[in-house]
Length: 231
Image (cartoon, rainbow, N blue to C red; front, side):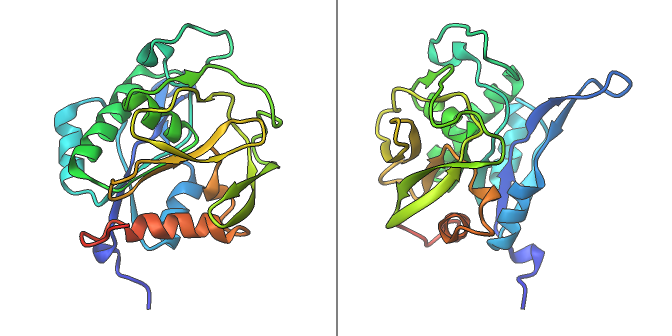
């Protein structure tokens, strides 16, 4: 019997910033269905946040959250990690950067389970003192939907997609890399000792139908929101 929505762990999801047609507001917020569907399938309740850097508003959401999911989207402003402008950087939204960096750090102080995907691994790395490659090439970057390379992840191998042109450069202090692509690109990392703080560069939400490891990632994340859960 399905778990009633009221009893599901609440997973807050900051949205991507999008440009709307001029006849509308001009600026909006978006979260792909694959993210919320993956959380629902794993037993969680996705809560899409408004796009805001207002810390009082974010505090209220954090007070009622059981977990934090950071999704893909536009690039992180290189000023956030001491980087230089690059012609390939696009989709920068300073409100989103501020919002997510604050949420990352606040969630860590609360030991709130956190999962980062694509941009999510990048913003987590920046939030805790790491840096990014502003633009990379290699293993067929970028490919929006195709599975283009294999990597060793967990106990076996997995075929993953590449739809990014930025990646982790210097890893934030305390974090460990748990998977790399053949060209050395960081594909997964985590923070030892945290209740749950993991991030991946690929898009597991697009692969849950065919990759047990991707389904397990979301299940373990939602399961970690149990107050008694420890790895």
